[in-house]
Image 1 (cartoon, rainbow, N blue to C red):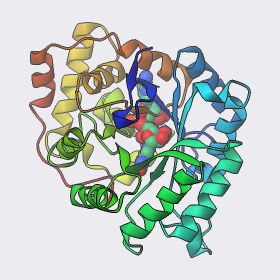
Image 2 (image 1 turned 180 degrees about the vertical axis):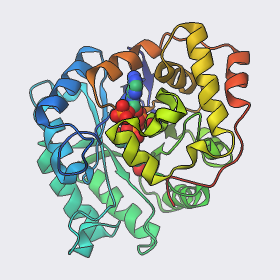
Image 3 (image 1 turned 135 degrees about the vertical axis):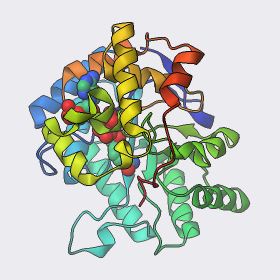
Length: 323
Ligand SMILES: NC(=O)c1ccc[n+]([C@@H]2O[C@H](COP(=O)([O-])OP(=O)(O)OC[C@H]3O[C@@H](n4cnc5c(N)ncnc54)[C@H](OP(=O)(O)O)[C@@H]3O)[C@@H](O)[C@H]2O)c1
């Protein structure tokens, strides 16, 4: 495993963050039950992964419970644990979602209790809340840091102008500043290169892309994207991976992966590892083998011309991830 410094925090994290969205069965058909999830987390620990990303809403709390249960058997201090809040946890309770002080405080308490931890290393806002002034949210987050429940605060998919406003306000008001951006970024979706990624680079914000493999689209020939249960779900979701030059990008990934004797997933991840503005991709996995592939991808080297060739067919597509 390789390790890196997480933005301005000075914290060390593994170059692969394990995404925990697939853990727990209260969510969707493609997810893993407790035993299968445990197997993946334990293998991740063996492989040297120290960074984990979950959310209150993943399997409506079950993902946090599973992660907390497994990590609870190890030395908590050795891991960097991130969770997030925004989506509504109970359909009939509007205050179980959003970024109001009430929702944030209640949901953070609930997350810590499910994780079995007093403190979470990174607490992220999962989306922008158009109904709560960002200053209210920043003050509630700052108080959570002062209470010792949260070490650092981070954000996820939003417009760059919104993120810039939040960074500016936290500086002006002397509040805890977002240290990270978790956004949709992969070889088949590169709209973040226009505004968000240069902003993060300028502001020393750590970048942790979600769906680094375009939820499976970059791991197999495009015609087979919906061949798995997850793929079927993702194809229905309709992210613009096949739009613009997406089909040709997929074909070039196949071709170069064959030439180098590696898997498409490994080549696609290697591309992200070569991008300077990426701190650590958040890998989603439905098996132990996927994790092993991802760790091997750290050894796949790409030349400047490989990277240019992979990127060449890409054309701008509609914005996705925070529609
Ligand atoms: N902030 C946000 O809004 C947000 C949104 C989404 C996700 N996330 C975070 O990001 C994490 C990753 O998201 P993601 O699951 O969409 O990421 P991803 O890594 O792009 O996609 C994971 C899927 O790719 C396929 N895959 C992975 N490794 C493979 C391999 N070696 N060989 C073949 N196929 C492979 C599997 O698809 P099959 O199962 O079809 O085989 C797997 O389910 C989540 O767990 C979560 O922590 C955050």
